[in-house]
Length: 114
Length: 112
Image 1 (cartoon, chains in turn yellow, orange):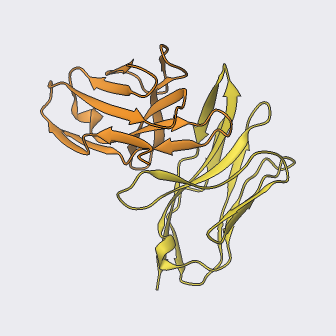
Image 2 (cartoon, chains in turn yellow, red; image 1 turned 120 degrees about the vertical axis):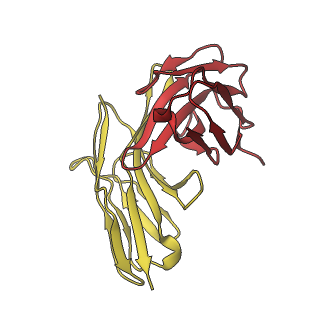
Image 3 (cartoon, helix red, strand yellow; image 1 turned 30 degrees about the horizontal axis):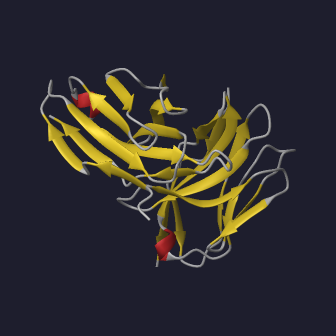
């Protein structure tokens, strides 16, 4: 079956530091890849996505590139802010049996300190 | 634009009591999901509904039942609550074309 592996954290960074959260996956077929973010006390929301190999998703200064050769979708941001403190989930989705089958990583908690 | 709405947001139950979590989406999505989130466990799929009229077990279905009432609504029922079901529950629906999930705000359930 499909699986997603990401570092659990927590990750603690100072403001303006560079962020990388690693995500690797195993899947049959050609899944779409996602990063979701969960701010404290809220539900998950889409941060960025990529639907095919070599696509780069980007949003709010975050980027991730769909690397099929390394089965990875690492999340990066050049300069984090305190407001980026949240839990980040890597996920993949593929059409299986006529519906979107979604597999999540365990989530990585990011804390940014001033 | 409401998206996914789930109720209640908070609930406290005693062991053995029953309750139903309600979820509705207004995006005309076929697929809907119920997840639970526990510290250190990530998101775990309880049940899903690929389309109206169908439901299937996910990773952790024991102790739960679901009903896909119509295309909009997907409810989760705890027949006899147990402390192990203390968790935050999320309902979601999926865009068939992109695979993106849209989540509700969550329901925090405590079973004493």
